[in-house]
Image 1 (cartoon, rainbow, N blue to C red):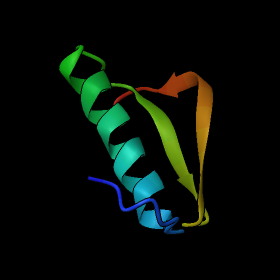
Image 2: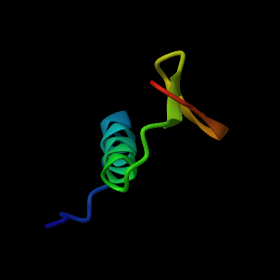
Image 3: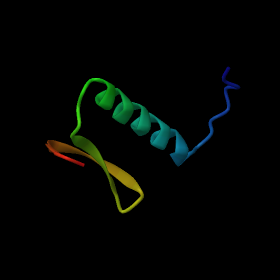
Image 4: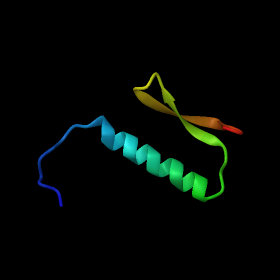
Length: 52
């Protein structure tokens, strides 16, 4: 599966965050816990944004 070669990619982080968001939705959370910041990083909220 892995070639042993290191590949640097921001896309891997995007996929991981997307997976976490999906799991939160499937668990019944309608709140937004993770937000993108300036399109280059993510922040985990202490209190989720409701209704988003």
